[in-house]
Image (cartoon, rainbow, N blue to C red; front, side):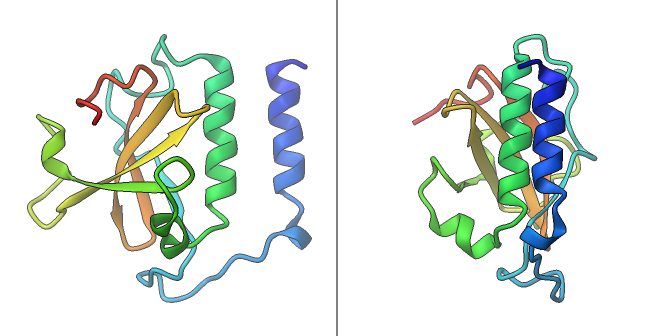
Length: 142
């Protein structure tokens, strides 16, 4: 199956509103659904990264579609393989200036059979993706 057919199939499955029941609450509650933003995605760690394979891009999209139906509470309580791993922001040197002193933690999301990860931060219900790390080289992994 080609990449375009995979994406079309994914969108067809996810756009069936009868199967999706999002929660729209006050926007700051841990029981709200997660929204994603690529607004602060960093150069050299974006979708144009040559180390990020087409299949991995599809897996990332599938993961985002799945997770966007979950709440923050659900994902933080899961193990790091299926949910988010919350880490101190000091694990990554030279963070972008958008990471101010009031942001203490970053959230790691793994995808593509744990071979890749995205690193970002949370404000309200929004998960801002800063880095897509297909080689797991952005920081030392414990």
